[in-house]
Length: 206
Image 1 (cartoon, rainbow, N blue to C red):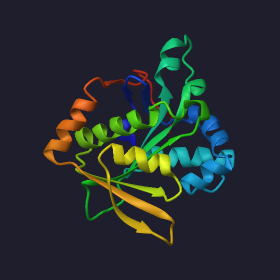
Image 2 (image 1 turned 45 degrees about the vertical axis):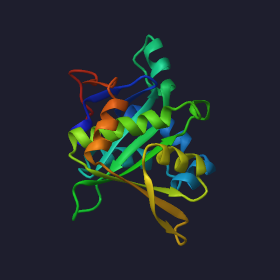
Image 3 (image 1 turned 90 degrees about the horizontal axis):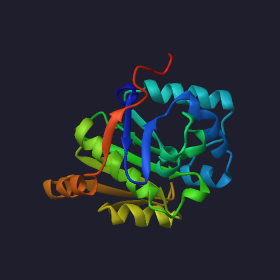
């Protein structure tokens, strides 16, 4: 999605930045993990296929992707490189043509040293905020493998409720309806989040 290609969202624990070609080599290394392939229902890709996927996700109007950076590492470093600060990614898929107010959300904290510290929780809250305030979404769904208990617990903590179980796909579907009380709760949880230009004056080459 080109809408977010020049947006940086800065929280307390994470910074969300657009997925660019700079991030692909690290992402490709992550996705060699059989555990991550299982948890994300992904097939291994070659590095060139990963670059093609990054370009596709950048251009597709129904996919919004941010790379999750460890904000503490990112703000402490001197150089411009983000690769050493990458923790994972967070995505919104607008895949229901009949309901443009619905977004499917998923998050992956791929870097083992970054897990269990609340980075995924803040990344999801920030993506929910972006979906509500920038994309006009009012409903969110998360589809999670039945064996991924940590992720299921996290989404339930964020007010998602289980609405379906698929024995065929071995996954549960959780949903959050963005009522006015839920919207106010979200705004309170994300009141510290700053939106800034990402690398002002630059853009990803076509």
